[in-house]
Every structure is written in structure tokens, then in C-alpha cells.
Amino acid sequence: MQLTSGLNFIWDVPNTFSTQITLIGILTALFLISASTGLNRGIKYLSNVNMLLGCLLLSILFLLGPSVQIINKLINSTASYIGTIIPASLHLETFAQNTWTETWTVFYWAWMCAWTPFVGSFIARISKGRTIREFVIGVLVVPTAIGIVWFSVFGGNALHLIHNLGLTSLMDAVNNDTSVAIFALLDYFPASFLLNIIAVVLITTFFITSADSVTFTLGMYSTNGDTDPPNEIKMIWGITFAGGAAVLLMSGGLEAMQNVIIAITFPFYILMVFMSYAIMKDIKKNKLANQSLQSYSIHSTEKNMNTNKQAK
Image (tube, rainbow, N blue to C red):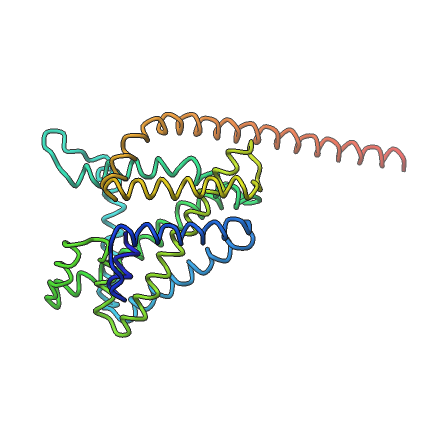
């Protein structure tokens, strides 16, 4: 939906259901080609390009926007985030109906839970050889920090345009269609055409790399944990994945997806409890094994030293 809105905004491509289905077909072909080349080729290269484009767009908006105001917003919002993360994450309107809580807080609980089982497996697969500390920093701390910077730069620019410059047309465009928000924002910057093209390419690579990880991990699950699943399995999952996206789009787009995710993710919460228990059990088992190995190594060294002394 965001891509078709961007294409319509830049080149007046009709933003219709047929365009969206055509785009799903093109993106499916692209991510299947990428997934078929394996982790160290297509997926790796696209992920690197994705990060470089994201950093480029972020840097441009920071330099062209109100940089000092963005830094102030970054510091203030970070402090607010740290101070309110627990109450904000658990806040529910018990005695009143709040659409924000339903469509954002509850939805994102379900959204993150739905991604957890296979994304965790995929990141574990590409993080072989890393320590648990490195894994946690790379998966939890770094993305959170990047997210805070990203929202501070984009949100800070939008707030500056609306509140400081009085450009309420940006607010009207976002309220009318949220999928066009980023393109409407970039339209107020110099070289907006080029920036919007970068945004389209960035969204495309985000979609492809996400779909790559899904098909690769589901392929592993379907082959008894094979760390390099056959392309045929990945193709089947990729086509199924694209078909599900088309059905949800036909059924109502984002709203339909939100309802489906909230409805089906409750069993995953139970699964995550067992997964957490299994992880702690495995860590404890590995710790005991390492201690035993270390003790054995020390004992062997001492024995060899005593043997050498006796021989002398």
C-alpha cells in the first residue's frame, strides 16, 4: 500500500487494487530470486544496500532539517521513552473505549509476538559464532537506538514543518492517507524527487529483505532444521506468503491484517513461555558443560605437569 501510494505520488501511477496485486507479483519474484541465492549473496547484499540507503536518507533529512531542534527532540523523547516504557506498554483503557489503544498498543503486542518465533530463528542462524551478549546488543539495543534516531529525525522534521512553519497541508495529507506520509514529508525538501525515489527503493528493499527472512526460516522449519533449505521449499513458502498478502489486501488491507494478527497470535504467547524456558535450560546446560570441560582441562594440565616432573 505504501509503495503504490509512493508510485502514485511521484509518477501518477494509478493507486488501484490491480496495481497493488501487480506490485505484489513483482516483489514476490524479486525476493524469491534473492532468497534462492542464499544468505551470503542476495540476502546479504540487499540487506547492506538497505541499511546504506536508510542511513543516507536519514543523514540528508538531518542535515537539511532543523538539526538543533532534532537533537533536542531526540534527547527529550529518549528520556520520555525510558521513563514511560513500562506504563505506556501496559496501559489499557479499562473503563473506556480507546481506539488508539486497540489499534496500536494491542496490535503491536500481537505484531511483535507473531514475528518473534521465526525472526528469532533467522537472526540466530545468521549470528552463529556470536556470544549471547553480542546477540542481545545487536538485536535489541542497536535497533532500538536506530529507531529512536529515525523517529526523531522524521518526526522532528514533520513537527517543525507543521508547528513552526504552519504547513498544515502536510498534516492534512497524512490524515487523508497515512501510506503517503513519508512522500508528502519529503516533498517539502530540496531535490524532493530524488529523495522520494530513494524512499521507494528503500521501502522495496525493506519488503524484500523481510520476505527473504520469512521464506528462509519457514524453509528451515519445513526441513527439520536444515540451515540451508532447498530452493523448492523456499519458493513454495514465498508464493504462499504472497498469496496471503493478496488475500488480506483484498479483504481490507491494513485493518484486515490487524484483525487477523490479533486473533491468531494468542497461542504464540504460550509458545514464547516454553521457548524462554528452553533457552534458559539450554544456557544452564551449556554453562555446566563448559565448567566441566574447564575442570577437565585444568586437571589434565596438572596431570601432565606432574608426569613431566616425574620423568625429569
